[in-house]
Length: 257
Image 1 (cartoon, rainbow, N blue to C red):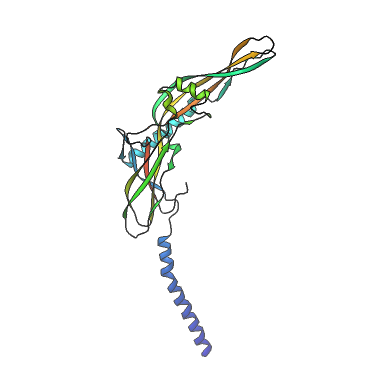
Image 2: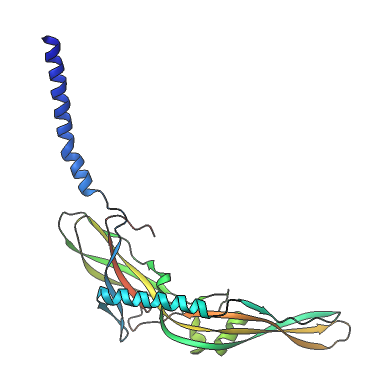
């Protein structure tokens, strides 16, 4: 009888231990971050130079249209980055210098670039069991992007400044900060994302190579490479922020980008 009583006591203590752990496990589960639940809940775009909130339906359509345009552009534009036009050189030819002329084939205004989406704020968490208003501070910065390595001060960059619509402003960088008040649900992170709306210039940069012959003393020029040039130019809004699509994103877990 004594052995049975001891077994009963041990069993009872085990059951009590399990019952005591259940509330803690439930609490931990309720507060555990949710995975893979990231979603855009608000969107803003430039209207008359300032950010204006749009519906999520408008945001989704704008993003889909932009992705389709980027895909179509990639299909239609030239596949070859460089077309070599070098001519045979005479014996003794030495390169003096190279010059460039940018021939713009097209210029597209206000092109959204969803593939360049990035996070521009820290993630603000609401640790409470009820929704609260929190301020999300963000900083956006955007410069030009190009399919070739180029700077405004390089020889190719100077040629682009002469041949591009809008002149030398193509290389400008725009940066500014702002904030938005957002109603964050319980146990949720919220942050701001951004992708730019840019102007797009594309065409070919013609290289000319200038030679000096060591034996004859004559100088001559020959066509060099015809370089495919595709540049996206940053745009600035009236408030100083770079033009683009700004979105508030919510998630049960921290962002991984």
